Each structure stands twice: as C-alpha cells, then as structure tokens.
Length: 92
Image 1 (cartoon, rainbow, N blue to C red):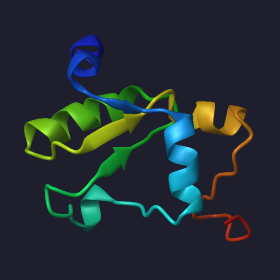
Image 2 (cartoon, rainbow, N blue to C red):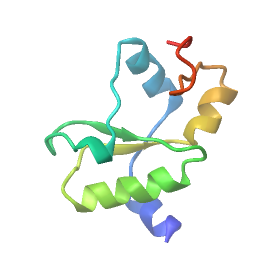
Image 3 (cartoon, one colour):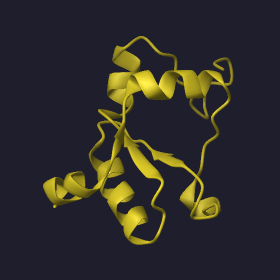
Image 4 (cartoon, rainbow, N blue to C red):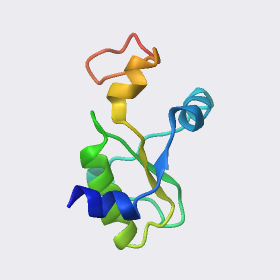
C-alpha cells in the first residue's frame, strides 16, 4: 500500500522546505478544516510513511497541490533544522 501511495504522491525536499519555513510557511491540521483545494499543502510525519499515505488520500480527494516531506521530520532534524512542538514554546 505504501509503494502504491508513493507512486502517486509527490515529495518536497528539505532544500525546498527550509526557505519556506523561514518565510513563515503555515501549518494545516486536517481536524481543524482543510483549506481550499487549490492551496498548497505539505504533509509531514516522523518517517514519511504516514504522510505519504495521507498525501495520496488528499490528492484523491481533490487536493492536487499536496506533497509529502521527503524523509519526514527525522530527516529534518538530522539535517540540523529546528523543530517546534506544542510542548516547547521556546523554539520558533
């Protein structure tokens, strides 16, 4: 199932994402309501597997500008980029 989803889900690299986060790229939470299907959506999870499945599902739902973070948050942190969690208000 993951391989099938990966075949149809585009990915965003760290090199593409880093400047966007520095420019104030927002966060979308599905449980708080999806934006207009023409908006760009980046889906991420720890290792990139769940976000790949979620991206494929969102694209099937009509959100064609959806991408998964290639490698997930694990790769983000390994690259030395900071990550903010709900429990850590000190990080930006």
